[in-house]
Length: 495
Ligand SMILES: Cc1cc2nc3c(=O)[nH]c(=O)nc-3n(C[C@H](O)[C@H](O)[C@H](O)COP(=O)(O)OP(=O)(O)OC[C@H]3O[C@@H](n4cnc5c(N)ncnc54)[C@H](O)[C@@H]3O)c2cc1C
Image (cartoon, rainbow, N blue to C red; front, side, top):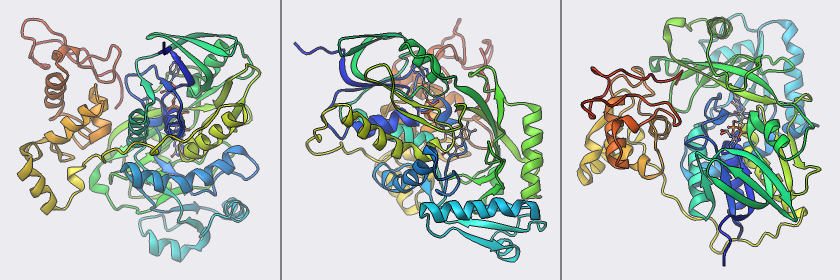
């Protein structure tokens, strides 16, 4: 009899690291499980970051994150071609605002030289201002990196997890790991959704990796939480800058950036503040003031009045500021910990590295016949030429029904997202952009809830923003009422 609970590899955490690990392992004939406590993959730090695939020259060579940054950078383009998530190599400028910043520029070009990152060059003031005329005229010089890219990080997580699942991986959401024990060559992992057993366990729990390591009997490191607040500006500022603008970095942070996101908004941030609570994703007045002041130093035309949304994410930081990846003293239990920035960039390279370490530890890797399963690329109606939009609307009337007016998201895309696994408003938002525009869901939230309720066969009161207790309405009397006379339970924090 097949033991349904027995897996070759259990991955704890379904962030971008867990998703790239599952995707990479799904190339082989293995039983792989991802155990994620949230309602969807990518709902931790992996959805709350700057969305940059760093150019390869940011982290110092000689560190693990330095080598994996450049390797990962080179892998995202192919993954995007295969899975169809948002990705564009827009390039970056790291700007020196004073003569004292110039040695930092030299360090970046030296990193690029040492790692073989092509095209990274010093630009003088005139060249910079010709390319980016909205930058401060006070700048001294900059380093240009054509290899830097922007990505939709949550779309990437969904795409990777979906293809891993279609290739046989068991992706379990709402599945919190609570304890584990080892006996013989098997780990028994107790979760909120029953027991999972596995020969190998990969600890990819982000800022909670320390707690998971303790469950495995390891007490070797403390993961510090370093919060980063980000602020999104109105889309009317599209084109303000066309490359990512970095200040010169400090030893612990790349500083506050001005980022032209893949979707055409400008984002500014992040901060870098140590916090005691790893769940503290509140934005703050002080964070907003610091981000806006720092962004204005680079691009003086930015105004606090343009902020339409804000969020914060938590970096998982180890004392040596590097990634920790590899086997531990607990047989079969591997660290994939301390994955702070550039963790998103490095993720595909981390996955390849971990698969190599598992092979070295005795995991047999027989290629999956036929390779990874094909997945259909999601349709983004707003990005299509009008002729293609008309064709789609003619074959499926739901493409003619606009649900989110700010981002031009159609009813067909909402249904498609639910078919692909969206269960919450955030799940819809991050798959389709419904609710991400200027009005921040003011018009489309109730319609999205109705479509979710209808497709999932549940009542409106069961729809949540992001799972758990984040309900949006209570149901008494008229169960079909959204907001209105019924008390709204609250959206529970920043978007
Ligand atoms: C503000 C900010 C900006 C950043 N910008 C960039 C950038 O531009 N480029 C870049 O390369 N990197 C960036 N980073 C870093 C990058 O976001 C992270 O390195 C990456 O997201 C880490 O992914 P992860 O999968 O390790 O963590 P997470 O996404 O946090 O995933 C860990 C998962 O583990 C789950 N989990 C925790 N405990 C349990 C449990 N007991 N049971 C089950 N599941 C559990 C969590 O719910 C979570 O989903 C940024 C980080 C921040 C905070």
